[in-house]
Length: 156
Image (tube, one colour):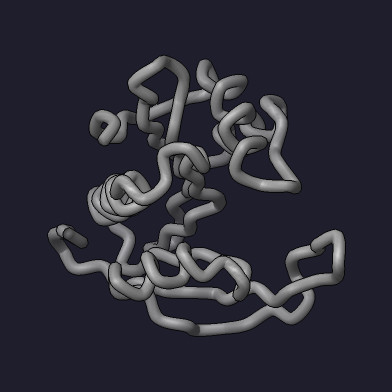
């Protein structure tokens, strides 16, 4: 497994964008990531790939006693090694430290590995957005998930 998640800032926007492109068809570019990280309450964590570069990222934001994961991704070559869980743990711990009582995210309803991970971590379905994610062969719904955060966090 790669190393422990570490905080990231806009200086890593280019490698974060490259990783986002490896993870998603509708990838964010470096300028988009830079803009996101400049938002009030925004934070990010990355994991370093053993061969160099990044193999995991999470970008989130805090506000109003809640936190929201804006994106989370693990390089396809590094999946199945627990990196997604480590990144979720880092984001949840940061959210708790920032005073958040809940962590939200949206995920495509056809992303079964991610849905399984979120269920294992204790996220529950609180909403559905039909046709939210555009695909080459149509659109799929987004599931809005929520995790109630305890005063001290340990998802593992």
